[in-house]
Image (cartoon, rainbow, N blue to C red; front, side):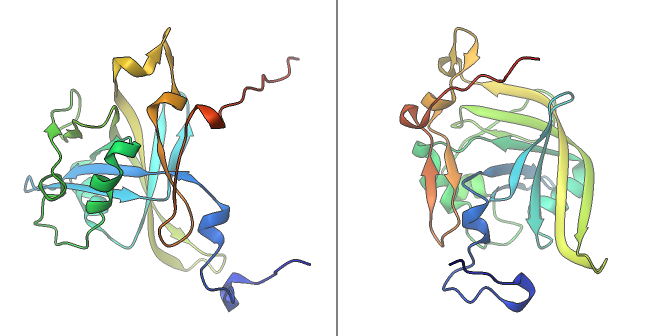
Length: 204
């Protein structure tokens, strides 16, 4: 037996399972600056990497939110890694506040200067990507109708990594304590050494 549904007709469940199935997902904790200089920091659950060289990452803004508008105005953003010690602060930056509110201050976080872009990173985060926007794509359905969702893509032009996460020059994901978004109303996951296994790719 399986539960089948067509999304356009509704899922018929207590909570939409789509996000839970496509997960857990890395969190796009995105800092931006408005053209007027107001800082913004917001988490996005639709975030991932799209390319190696050049490195390109992207997040999806469901609705025209402050982060989207700021990137449209300035062309830059910074992605900041959410770790377990930062989970509560990240959650504070989810608050539905106006564009005049600085979420760094709201969550008690420290803006640190970036090296390449004019947008601060989260000083408390052990990893940050400085990004310049390459594309903003408004999504559309199979009926070609525009959806109120925008995919923001950016080339990573600067990377900050805390030295303690580099073991013999290799980034140690298992020790970083990444926080990932699940699909339930409040579900999150962490990555640790107990989840680690290795599998080498077949050689030609």
